[in-house]
Image 1 (cartoon, one colour):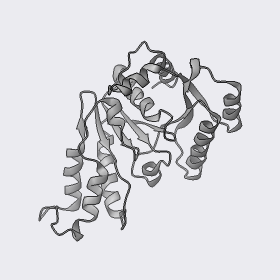
Image 2 (cartoon, one colour):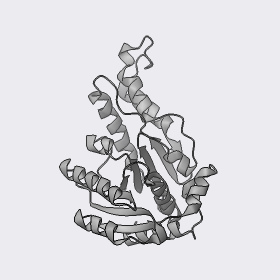
Image 3 (cartoon, one colour):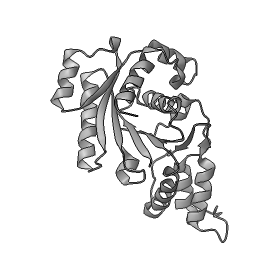
Image 4 (cartoon, helix red, strand yellow):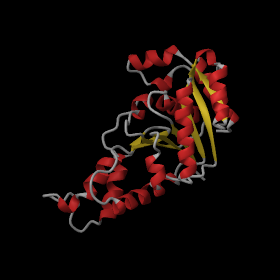
Amino acid sequence: MTHTIAVAGKGGVGKTTTCGMIIDHLVRSGKAPILVVDADANSNLNEVLGVEVETTLGDIREEIAHAELAKTNPIPAGMSKADYMEMKVSRALVEEDDFDMLVMGRTQGKGCYCFVNGLLKTQLDKYVGNYRYTVIDNEAGLEYIARGTLPHVDTLLLVSDCSRRGIQAVARIAEMVQELELKPGRMGLIVNRAPGGVLNAGVREEIEKHGLELFGVLPQDDLVFEYDCEGKPSSKVPEDTPVKQALRAIMNRLNL
């Protein structure tokens, strides 16, 4: 049975890099095959992992949603929208040795998307069952999970930087999860970029104030920044770096 891990947090806190390192950890732990879903509107998880993406599911959804209004209908005669969706999704799947990747891409535009969203959910449900883990990089709004397009979440990891405002932002996401009744199997906080891997009293106080469960702390690691500046996949920093060691400890504590 597939275990779904979702990663969420506001922009700029290192959420996507953390998500990439989680995927790298699962691969190195022999937990492939993994389905990777980039559900962040910013869509740059592929760069963190070092893979190329040509087509997003958002592009496909727009194409099918407006097919009947297009001057030239892209759907071949005699092919249903469902069959066309299945063909296009299979082509959008980026296949690597240990994981496959889908990018959700743009959010919906004008018009009714209920039918095409249903088609997309049906196709994703077919894929998810083929993997031991599904890892989803989300935007702060958790749009695709909230809409039911993506599967139920077993482990929800909320990523914040080492600041009071960052913790407050994550707390708002946690509140939204409750309001939407998403009911993940477990939900907790990972604090990223902590100097020396240590939280000061003010940040700990903020975490306790909002009743957040702290899964662990990742230290500030300049090598991650250097990899990004040099165009290297930041998820591939060496295993003996402080941030990788700390992440590995968190994942082991969570039995992931």
